[in-house]
Length: 71
Image 1: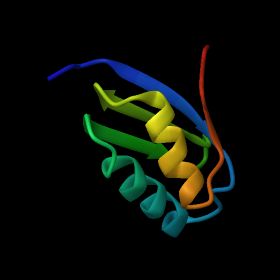
Image 2: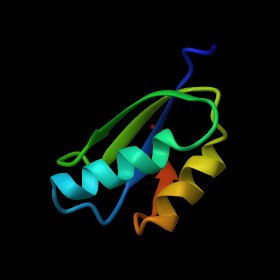
Image 3: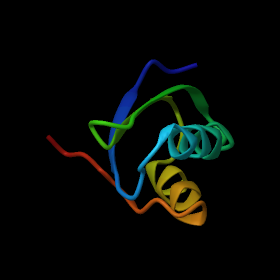
């Protein structure tokens, strides 16, 4: 189990329902051990060994374009 954190910029979220859908999509990705989605910050912090590309794809499939936050 890894404590690695990857931060993502997540676009298109407008409500708590969006946050719940984004969280569920991220949790479905293999290797995710924890996730925190921030509606106001339009971001997500993902812990674990998940492939960042798989997280981005999962978010895209539910309508939220995302990218790794390199800051």
